[in-house]
Length: 360
Image 1: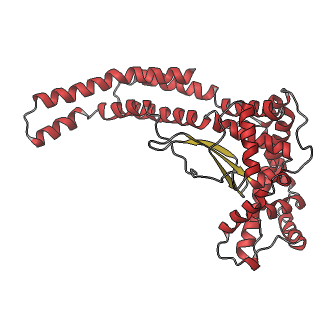
Image 2 (image 1 turned 180 degrees about the horizontal axis):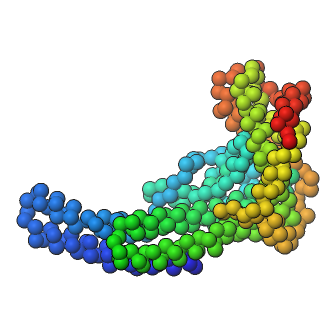
C-alpha cells in the first residue's frame, strides 16, 4: 500500500513539472528565429534543468513493457524432461497460477530461483531455475515443495513487482538530486513512503511463495525442505567447489558433477559450516524471513502425507541424469569420453579426508 501511494504521489508531482518543461520547449520553438543553431539551443535549454530528469523519469515510471534477466533463455523442453514438466504444470494448477514457460537446470548449489522477462513485442515469459545438487538433498515431497515455491514466484510475477519497486526507488533518487529546493520536497515524501513500504513488505513475496507451496504439497514438506536447504547449503557449496577444482586439475572428470558432489557431501561431515549456517538462519535477510519464522508459518498449515514418502528426488526423475551429463560436459568440453567417470569410493574418501582438514 505504501509503495503504491508513493508511486501515485511521485507521478502526481512530476506531471505538472513535465508539462511545464514541454510547454517551455514549445514556446521556445515558437518564438525562436528559424535558424538551425538557435533551434537546437532552444530545445536544449527547454529540456535543461529539472526537465532533463523529470520528463524521462515520468515516462520511465509508467513503462512496464520490457524486462530482461541475465539468465533468459529457452530452457529445457518437455520432450527432454517430460516427467519434470508434468510435475511442474500440476503444481502450478494446484496453486492457481500460470506454469513457467521455461525450465532451467544447474548443477551448482544455490541456483533455485524464478523470474519473469518480456522482450519488445513479445509475451511475458516465466522462468524457473532448479539446482540438481540442491534437489539431491531432498526427498521427492520436499523437492516438490521447493519447486512449488519457485513456481509461485514466477506464476505470481514477484520479480516484476520487485523490478517496479527498485526502478521507482532509483527514479526518486535521481529526481531528488535534480530538483532544487523546494521543488523536491514532495519527492522526498514519496521516497520516505516508498522506503517504509519496502521495509514493511520486504518478506511478503517469500511468505506468499511458502504459503502457496504449503497449501499445494503440505506444510510439513515445506518446513522439512527449508531446514535441509538452509543448513546444508554452505557445506554443499564447499564440496562442489572442491569437486570442480579437482576435476579441472586432474586427469579424469565426473560423469555428473552434482552427483559426485552429493556423494562427497554425504561422506564428509562439516560441523563448523553447519553451525555457522544454523546461526545465520536465525537472522532475517533483506528479502527472506528467518528460518524459524518460515518453518513456523509452514508448520501452521495443514500437513499432507505426500506422494513418495522417503523416495529420493532424483530416483523419481531418471531423465535428469542425462540432462546432468550434458550440463557437466559444458564444464569440461575438451575431455574425451573415456576420461569421464563417476568418482570412485576411494577418490571420495580422499576428497573427504581433504575436506576434514578444514574442520573446526
